[in-house]
Image (cartoon, rainbow, N blue to C red; front, side, top):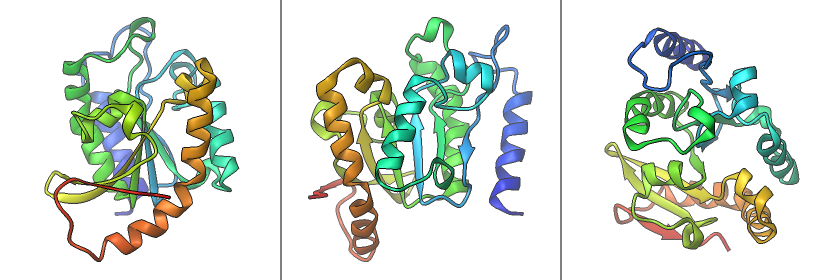
Length: 206
């Protein structure tokens, strides 16, 4: 069974899971999109209006900006995989609640295992909190971390959510700079994989 087939089976299970807390009314499942063989997995927060309508993550204004960021480093959207910490739209686009992230987390964990990316880029503080629960995004954005996640090494780069960049010019400037360093991160990761490091370690991308 290939990764595409595994993801489809997982998506079907989510579609049938009536216990998911945000599955109400006219909400649609927004599972994920992109290349199952991607080296980079982007994890955002949750679907908004357009994402719910088109059943695809990051297709509104924040998604258009994310596409621009990817284009700036010569990385087509189709070459990465994109998902969220919750896969149904929270009411009125509110922040996802801890119990909601926990309920969807078991599926997100399986998505991560199937994709098996070289690096996870978290977009916003909620997805960052899954891997770095005590971190502050204002001080950790754009930095490369090697963490022990579910018993295995995982490389994580926290970044601001594209929606935050659209609201704040300085955040946008910082996020653009963080993305420009992303290709170097992949090179560093291949080197760091050969070394033993502490359970959680920050590494410079400069």
